[in-house]
Image (cartoon, rainbow, N blue to C red; front, side, top):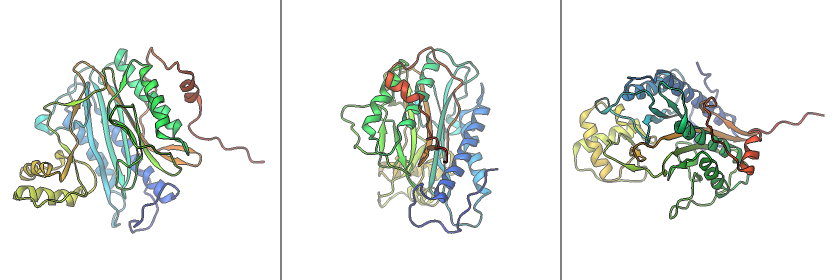
Amino acid sequence: MEKEPKDGVEEEEEELDCSSPKVVNKYQFAGNVANAAIEAVKAQCAVGKSVAELCEVGDNIINEKLQAVYKGKKIEKGIAFPTCISLNNCCGHFSPLKEDSIDLKDGDVAKIDLGVHVDGYVALVATTIVVGKDVTGRKADAIVAARTAADVIIRCLKQGKKNNEITPLIEKTVDAFGCKAVDGVVSHQIKRFAIDGTKVITNKNVPGHQVEECSIEGHEAYAIDVVVSTGEGKCRELDTKCTVFKRAPDQKYNLKMKTAREALYKIEKTHPKMPFSLREIDDSRVRLGITECVRHELLQPHPVLYEKEGEIVAQVKYCVLLMPSGPLKVTGDDISGVTSDKSVEDEEIVALLKTPVKTKKGKKK
């Protein structure tokens, strides 16, 4: 079992950064739980398995591991992002109800995505696997492109580095594998009770969607998130039911329907700050009320998005803490065994990838 963080009983009132050992400990603990959950889901991904049941496996492991710690302490803990398993050309957020689920097939490219928080300190993780087969061809290209781009980003997370200096390197890396980064996906700073902070690193420049320039600072936390496609990287909604939502914190509306009021009351009680899945709500009346909450923008949907049919989408996500010795990974799956017949040839990026992630300590005299 993961070692419980040692700190005071009361939840911290102020937001602390990674200069606080308590904060680092909570990120690492949440990361250990997230890593254990995604490994368990991976291990059960096999031909014929239900996606909905696999998502439940991930969520249940998170809840079970967190139930055993912080007993009697006023510390919030739980799922920071419900387990999603998005297949093939699906870009993300597929976390179906049992009645809408599909079964895994041989050769499916499965992106597993989930998140955990302890006292609001969030650990997110995502990986990509191929069900039942060796990873070759365009499937390998997409996975290695995502992994390599993430390796580039983590090496760029240095004090004073600007986000707009990192994006061109990501684009060149992904292009080397004949792939494109998916529009709208960013790596972002994470803060307490916030899975998407204000500082972002976009994976590619999209006309009309510029991000605000920012500089990387020490003791910050980031979720490195790379989603790439063998197609154009342009995703869209189809008719798949959206099941992942988040309470919009600043929105208020006097709901007329009783079912909607009941739904909002339950959500604010059980998921006031983090995304949740309809799978967690087994009351059909509450599910009915969700629609009106979304209509009045009290809930933010995370829609299921798709690339063109026949394309492959791969994802790599992990969280890092920017420590004095360099970025400290608290989540991440090892997919180093996947290889592609393509490689990065840009000299600047090749040199960057050869540099160590952490700074080596000098010898004491």
